[in-house]
Image (cartoon, rainbow, N blue to C red; front, side):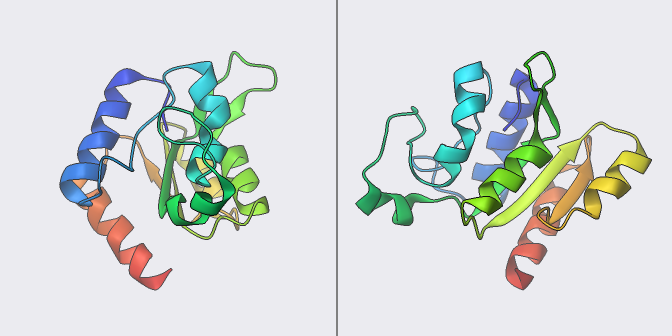
Length: 143
């Protein structure tokens, strides 16, 4: 999830072309406040990619395998929407998939985020997509 259009497009390229995801069930959201607020439900399979509710019987089968989030999603909200906080919320609701933060923050902040127990991968924005895909796939095998 990212609030900016170009990074969302890059995530879609990563998801479809490098990770081989089914784009009927995979997505990159975050362009609207509604999408940002619904992210946890989408990742947990409680809402589809159009934010429509999904029955609880289907939800387990539809949860995400990987959640990739920008760290600074929406700083204008009160409270701000941060990727690390959404990951904590995902984990609190039982999310067992791989979590990844992509950030333009300082190296010191990247190091701090990497120590967070709920976050599996932290990378700086600008990492080439093939390299990011390799990192995700390697962590996913271990995860």
